[in-house]
Amino acid sequence: MTNSLVLVINSGSSSVKYQLVDAAGGEAVASGIVERIGEDDGIVTHHCGTETIEHRGPIRDHAEGLALAFGMFEQSGYPLSGAGVRSVGHRVVHGGEVFYKPTVITDEVVEQISRLSALAPLHNPANVTGIESARALLPDVPQVAVFDTAFFHGLPAAASTYAIDLDLAREHGIRRYGFHGTSHKYVSGQAAEFLGRDVAELNQIVLHLGNGASASAILRGTAIDTSMGLTPLEGLVMGTRSGDIDPGIVLHLRRSAGMSVDDIDDLLNRRSGLKGLSGVNDFRALGQLIDDGNTAAQLAYDVYIHRLRRYIGAYLIELGGADVITFTAGVGENSASVRADALRGLGRFGIAVDDARNTAKSRVARRISPDSAEVAVLVVPTNEELAIARAALAATASSSA
Ligand code: AMP
Image: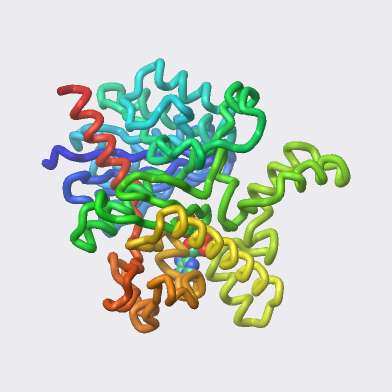
């Protein structure tokens, strides 16, 4: 039996995704998702090998959902208790100023993550619930928190500081933290490996374009800027989030449209972005609407690309030129048109996309720029679960060394 198995848990407000990963080989041994927690029509979907099993019924809370999932490991002939799980790795969204590396979980760590909930009210409380449930179910297995903000912890002050009253900002922890850090770090590492280079030799722009989306500028292995800020709302246009807006819009909505803070929160996080502009947040549905001649969908696409190009331009300047630009996540890995439009007409900056390479179907890391182009443009599949598993295993090993 392998001794590098890590259970990775990503706990959201009403769902928990989990994956049992062999951190050495990189394979997912089993995975699943618990959905509609707190409702009568809850569902657990569990995949193990080629088999998929399902449980439907009320799921009271996260603890019950995870217990059901653990039962399904047993049902599929792979009980977790006998699997020799070395560590449980938890994705935690906000590490604030406190956490900047994978951290073995203790009662005190849980309390600190809880305290950071003011900065991530949609995410950290759910992460804590997942941690508490997993600790109760697997009390003898070390648990590790891996923070989405960690890779950006060392952003230069010029990039992390908002131009507002400094004392007020300090008092309330208001600064740019950045998110998706696990993915940006993993993908930049994979990009360097693909090119046979060391991350310390390369200036990289990573474009993580999923339902949530973010860009980062990485100078010889160190992140120097990223598009998300105090919260994951800042930056690129996303599936349902607005990304950058004039903060005056919030004031205007509050004063003139009579919207409450919660209304505005809901508007900007769940009813904006592609969805707000076109009615759909999925890029495949957006593409279909554009093909059907829907002008709102076309506008949504154009706004998305415009914002993306603005960040690419900014990061090219911040880095003093890039060696690599990498697309990743659902949209970045799958949409050839987004990749082509994001980098169109940039030949004078050494950036080009080869049409045949860009449109070829592939699931592995690949170059989509011509070999002759100065800047390597890559598509690299992200794998946050594997990155979390490796980080958790390393933290467990160093804490017991
Ligand atoms: P993620 O958050 O990384 O899971 O990405 C999810 C998003 O990827 C979905 O909302 C889709 O918009 C997009 N996506 C997934 N598959 C495709 C595809 N084949 N073509 C275009 N977009 C896709």
